[in-house]
Length: 162
Image 1: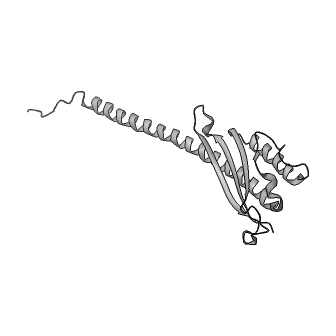
Image 2: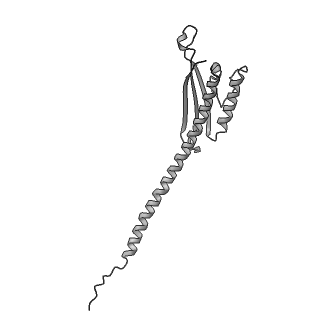
Image 3: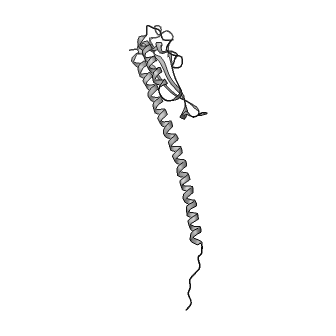
């Protein structure tokens, strides 16, 4: 009697090596996606913090809308010296916002406020209702990495005194 056994020496070893290579490529791709996901989460966290910081200052200005011009040229790196001493609420808002920006955990964070009267003389033109264009901006360096791009978040609104 003759046996029909076919010799397959080493074929399972090659199959195993090919399967291992495919698995390694898949795991490397998965690790790369994990790194991208982590970077995205950090960026989203920073954007959330910046949004809260900018909206906080905008709400402070809206609450003190009759003295909106007191916030003109506010810059957290310079301080609150430009705000008149008589404007106690604006000065307090500036100091609190400056502390919030400086303790935000964002790299090189800086906040600015610009207030522009939309009509130079509202008594001659009552249609404008003495409105102000308020722009609150927060600048920071993304992801706390050297060489990372600078980012900006800007909120703009039009205010009219009550």
